[in-house]
Image 1 (cartoon, rainbow, N blue to C red):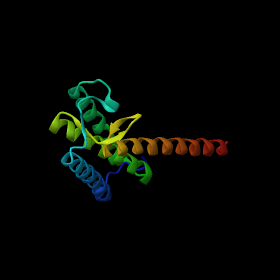
Image 2: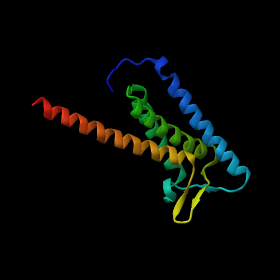
Image 3: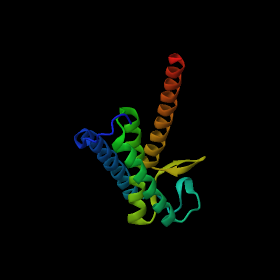
Image 4: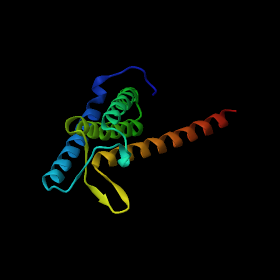
Length: 147
């Protein structure tokens, strides 16, 4: 977060990407729901036995904080990762609020069912984690050179 000045015009591409991720998620879910090849996950992430209401409340709070950091972030990679996290979380929260469960359709015999929102969330977290580690390493190397 380099510049504390918020410029809404700079976020138009971000909002377009966020919209595209959300629409893609809705379309893929609609296809799988129409073909009746999905499972309604009323539990938490990875099928954890958590009540849907508590998962929804925690998701909304987390999404608020992700959005807060996203609008303040200036760096492209971390901003894009935050958009992926927000888009995936919003897609699943939308399902949970509307239907009381999340529509999962990705089935691998040894892995819990998942959907495109889960993939976006996971990739966003991985990208952000790697970016933070690399950025921190660059910063520490830079500090060492200053001495």
